Image (cartoon, rainbow, N blue to C red; front, side):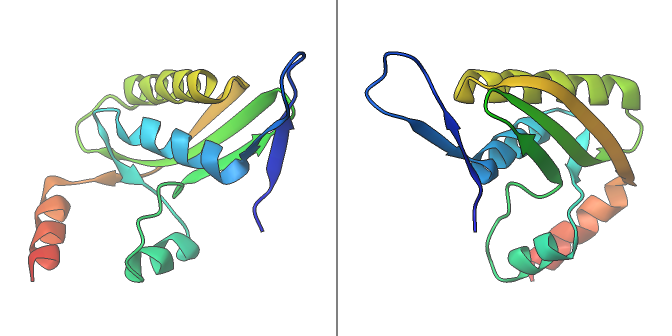
Length: 132
C-alpha cells in the first residue's frame, strides 16, 4: 500500500496528494542523470522486480516525506576513476532541485551512501548478458 502525503495550499480547489513512491522515482531518475554514477544499489526486492521485467526507478532510494518537507537517502554505485565527493555533491544538488521543482516540497537533506564501484569490465559483461 502506497503512502500518500497531502500538500495543502490556501485558496485551491482541492487537495493534492503525492505518493512517497513518486518522490522516490523522481529522486532515482535525478540521481542516475549524474555522470559518474554507474547505477543505484537496490535490495533483494529491487532485483526481483527487475527479473520480472519491470524497471524499478525507485531502486536505491529511501524517502521520508512530511507535509512540506522531504528527506532522501541515495544508495549509489559510482564509476571507477571518478572523484566520489564531486559525484555525491552533484547527485545531492540534482535530486534536491528535481524534487523541489516537481513537487513543491522542501528537501531538507539528501544523504548519499556509496555502496560500490562499477568497473568497465563489469559494464561490458552486463551488455553481453543482455544481448543473449
